[in-house]
Image 1 (cartoon, rainbow, N blue to C red):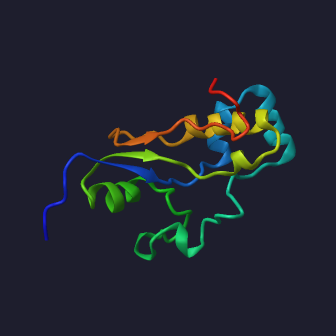
Image 2 (tube, rainbow, N blue to C red):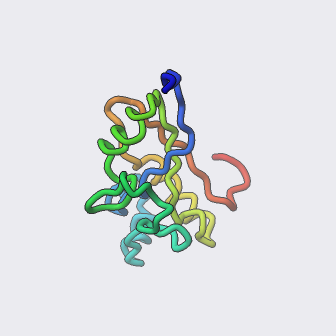
Image 3 (cartoon, one colour):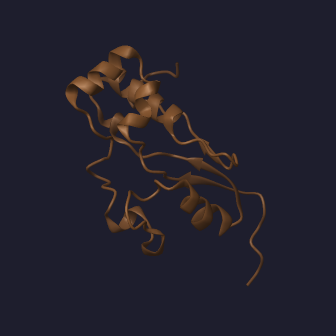
Length: 137
């Protein structure tokens, strides 16, 4: 087998959406209160549920937890196995599906900021925008 190339950048990595508790600190007071008052408990998409077969390879599934929720496993299974130097993380979440663009933008920003930080700096979070946002802020 030929050696894998070095300096690979994977730009299609999908970590699990963070728990609402993880992103609450990144929301403004108004939106934090809205999430708590409404009882919003997650941002998983109905069209992409976490436990369907297409969400992770069978040999990469966790015994508990959502696919993409364990940074150590992601590092071992994806980054180390394929000599990936960097991974650009694209967290699939439901903020884009909200009809209120301001609410969606607040949640998208909080998800971008609240995605787990990688101590080895090989994962990079992308900035996210709501689909109805006409221009970056």
